[in-house]
Length: 214
Image: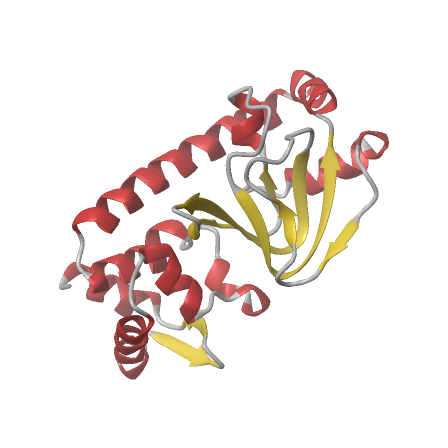
């Protein structure tokens, strides 16, 4: 989620949640098609969501703590997860049963509104990203990822959560070589930094100018 309330809730309703689970990079939290019997609160770290398309994992969403995942399957009454969740950075999570999650929503109007707002933003973001994915140039796709999906969440200001070149390439369906070339150009302009293939935005004003005149 975009708010810190999820961490507060795990403390207020600690009896509803599982103990903290530590996950290592590369682990599956859950796989597409597995039984969906819990909603996951990411307390620390980063877990990315993938869709299986022709036996290939396609990266659809980039998460950063604190965030809640598994909601889509739950709200649509799916019996199984509709995406796979793979740990991108060592993470700490807690889970909660749907009936307890509903109880919390009923008792907390502000949190219910925050959930609705967050889901709406996700839908809008994915819709915009899909349009760029279909019609946009390679550079447009990368600029979109740097701004629309992660700008407001401050993902690139958190050094330990920085996205990698591989992730930028995957989420936009681009050749890795092409992605590296575009990002290197942005780095040469002083817009981003590249440290061991981890991306960090260092000049948002220059980035906005680049978007305007792309």
